[in-house]
Image (cartoon, rainbow, N blue to C red; front, side):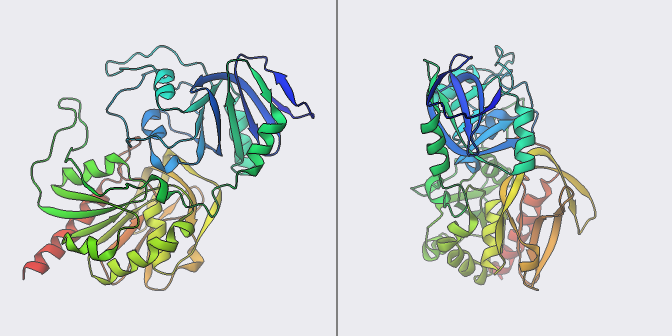
Length: 397
């Protein structure tokens, strides 16, 4: 249900316990779920049909409220394996339909219980198509979900809270979600039905992963390739990184404005590029890499979020269906001459991949590790490992 605010200070919802207020004073009423409280953030939409637990636990959604366009969310419950971060950073969730009892052999907890446990405020029973159309036409708004038992809401206060929130432009969230203490990844590989997460006992190549909000499935893919991965803070200095004697550097995904994160991240990445080490970036890591190479970024109207985004590989001429989650992009007109565009979006022609012409340095805007999503782009990990092998061989001679 949607309405415009008409100077009412407090109302009682027609539905039990939840309301969504947007920064233009549009109101959606619904049924509360998850944690009781208030959550303010940028309202975006995700078009994925599966993988809601991985999506909600992706640190890249810090500062955001996710509107799921697929109506049947929660029907397979939640488990302890499909989690991309130890802490959930998503501000809130919006669903169309009431969550049904889970029906899946892996389910351990109802989605509503899992949301409560992780203190995620939710609302269901909304016209998510109407909200998605609004975002498509107007851009991603600021919004606040309020979920309380009484069903009474001070709309004037909620509007003020929403409009006072500064938005993601200029916001550095990587420093909030990044690890405080450096650690070695425990070596688990990607999940399979027969064995679950099997441990990698071979450690051929040393990789430093700079954590701007890294997903666990990225680390699992490196384990598939027998990598010994050390995850370091987004502010770790170059001297400490090089002490580990890595064979390659990975720049992770993450939330927020890359230009804000770049204030401290850019000098680090620039020095690592000068070292000659292979560098691979994903999502925010792609944007940080571009900034370190003197390109520019900007906020997008909608962003790309879903598991059905077509991307063209300009080298192989093949089309990949990709998993994406980003609200900023690299500006094509800002790219220096020593950077080649390797991938582009077939939705809006925005840049989806770049590489440095004279060094083993490259990145993509999308998520080749999927989780959730298609597996068309896993070859990118193989390309990075091949560059690592060349570097390791060169160091031996």
